[in-house]
Image (cartoon, rainbow, N blue to C red):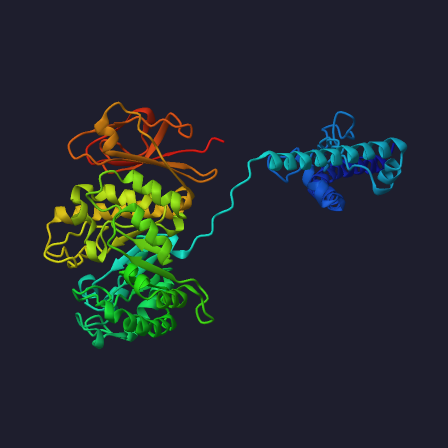
Length: 567
């Protein structure tokens, strides 16, 4: 080999040796660019995936989220095989999808129509329809059978407005009201409504000089009582509260010669009264009260019949029935019963219960058996007799309130009877109106007692209005089989019953010094009853159960008991 050929070969070898490092450097320099290119291709591939699927596929191979593992070529320059992964590749882990739960959608309309028309379903539907109607007819028949077998309720009796609650008499306008006139009475209407008063009996308020028949003016309101305008306003206010107004037109109410003056003046006074009645009916009064009815009915029967017709017969202006109340001083039950029949009044106030009546049971039974209870009226005082606490005594006040409000008929009270107002030197004492600010000059203990009496009266009055047995129930005197004669003579017990309503027993001991043991035995009575009200709540507390075969009452004590209807 020549020298020139040798040199050429050496240059080629050097050139190759120099080229290899350069190729390596270029390969190393290009490796990052290749990785970036592969990564770009992987990003493009991922972008093609659905967004929802891409969120489900987590990336692996990097330290942080979103990094991809890039592997460099092996030292030997070999291509990555099964043991390795291609540069720029991303490991994707696809979770296995859970199979969807199969939801029952039921039959389609077409499938349902095909099934519904099959003979089996047709028979089933008919069977269910027959069962339904048989059950319905069975229930209907059972209901009809229950109605037919159940005891029939009694028809409610026909009653008038004056039988629906107590009547409240105000005989002296000046003594009753703060302003001493009819306007003051109007201001107390709400108080009377709270007591469940059904009728207000006013006056007399007309001009009537004592024992002077010639100066009598029925149609003029006395200046001492107020004015006609005040009277009209009072009537309107009372009607709004459901209280009727009765006007006392007794002619000679301030004189001493009798309510109708002398016998010679009865005819002329009765004639003048007829025209006055027409006047007051047009002013809206709901009835009239007259004292001494036996006298005018006997002396001028024709004029008395005219007076009755004007008051009791409804007119076009006032179709509602009006009440005619008579007052008599008679106290015998036989005489009172006879006068009630002959006079034709709607209610007759008498002294049949007024002390010293020893045993009221016989009088009660005679009047109840002779007349409808809608004609019976009960009072112990009144304008002529005085107040309840003075007539019977303060100790008997609650007992008398319970008696009047549980008897069959209409109870009539004088103003102030609900608080125990006493007659002093007059039968028209000043009414006491208690308030939080003013005690009317009385002691606090007296005021507390008055309020207690008023609550007792109000509770009884509400019971009478609410309970059918007390308002218009049958009346049955109960015999006392006690061996003690004193207990039998000084005690009273009766039963009030209406149809299927709750029953009430009222028991009284009038003895002032002795207790009474009542042995009440009757087919209509159960062994025990519940105390509703007692005049001595410490001895017989409310809602306590007592034995009717041995009912013990203290002196001057009364109790109202209740037991249910049992069929």
